[in-house]
Length: 489
Ligand code: ADP
Ligand code: LRH
Image (cartoon, rainbow, N blue to C red; front, top):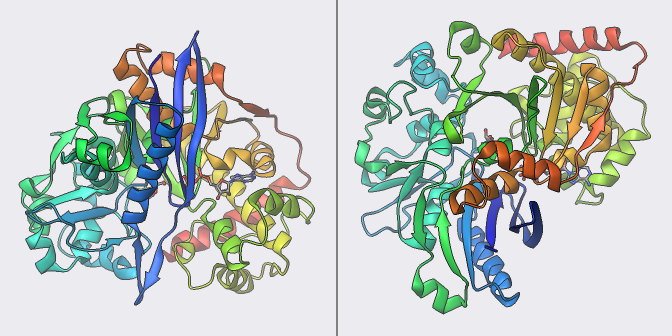
């Protein structure tokens, strides 16, 4: 029996999970969990990358203390953010967090030089202010020129552990710099940014062996002997692998965490005019797939409300408070960029309601309810769009990630979209990370088998749609808010 460890670090928390397969069952145990978040310094937002590295070491020490002497290890984190290294392999800068406001107007600036339609046709990636393309454009030009290597966050963590520099493809596609046709960095886009190809590392597929955690780290910290396997290092790529998508019904998914990523797994990208106008993305997946999806603001909204209230309530309590509150009282166009990183989320929600004439949410329960109601309605909007863009009718919506714990939101979603929702696994990302390791180790043959194993080994809850009074009126109200917000942005 081989031990496999998934390091899964999301924008709000990280964990190390141990997975083993025995008698056709995947068992998974949490070894270590830690919080994550960016901090603001002098008006800029940064991740504490050394803290994250230390947490991986701490988790591996716990694994060793449990008697694990050998394991494989895969890493995934959120996308788009990068680390610049000098020729000695040392970091040149603090790691910007993607919500940093330096890119606020960069998309418009770049569009003056290179048409967004050309970028989309080349890359198939949706326009988001924080795509690495825009972040690098906004980066200090001298520092960027000095960079010997540009690694994304999980690439960098692998590098710190092993000394090897790679650019894993699922995550690299979120830079908006990979060309769908050549499956390489796009030369025009690199030239535009004055970046040389050699500044990026070798593109590496999930499943490839990276090497061992260095002997010096193993000795210094008393770690197990770890063989590093390249996971699908974009957390959303791993999350989608870890959702056991239905094989007999057409299914869409939501990877529900800090973001709600709503989409479909496809074997070919859709980068036509219609998909561009709707701003859907084609992120590269493992095993020749594409994630055709939309970024929806997600549970970041409630995370911020919780933080501003000094974490007084747990997420479960917030869902409970929302449940006890009048339904569909206040709605906000939750995907509006104003919610990406406002100075104060609670005030921003109230301001949005005041401006649109919706009743202003006063209590914590009303705020939480407003967020969950609005998210469920946004899922309907984007699910409808997804069906048009793909030409497929969705029969079931499958939700993975921490948001699958939110019973209220799952039921609301089923009620609003009028279709069955299957919620779980809540640790779909770590499971997708493990799946790649299990396949590489030969424990299972392919992703179809991995998904069967995940389905049989984890809890998945079914939510059937219940009739909602006055749903049509609520949807019209929502559509109006959504329309005004998209017209203005
Ligand atoms: P990320 O990987 O982006 O950091 P996760 O997948 O860990 O996010 O999901 C975190 C989110 O899951 C939280 O913001 C919270 O809204 C939701 N969540 C977690 N546990 C619960 C719970 N018991 N009840 C309701 N929501 C929960
Ligand atoms: C989710 C996620 C998402 C990206 C965003 C930066 O954690 O990786 O897929 O768009 O963070």
